[in-house]
Length: 92
Image (cartoon, rainbow, N blue to C red):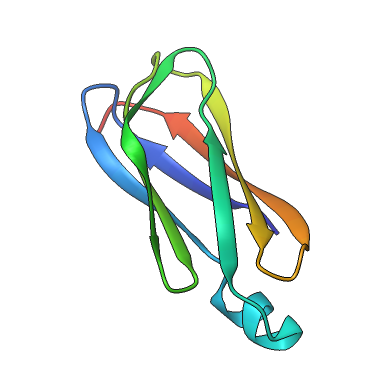
């Protein structure tokens, strides 16, 4: 199931996809990664890979909108997978 987080429009925060358990199951490691951030959000810097985790810093968003970010990985063994994270923009 995809993760969903609430974010305020002015926040600049890190969001992490945890690929570690899946990578352990297939005995593989991350070779390359792409994070797609939709219009309305801004990726701050490149995604960071730390073992089986991929983290992307994001800012922006319009109040009451929902955004779908997607992390796509390719493993050293040639497997490809992707996973979304949904951001719901709300005031606190």
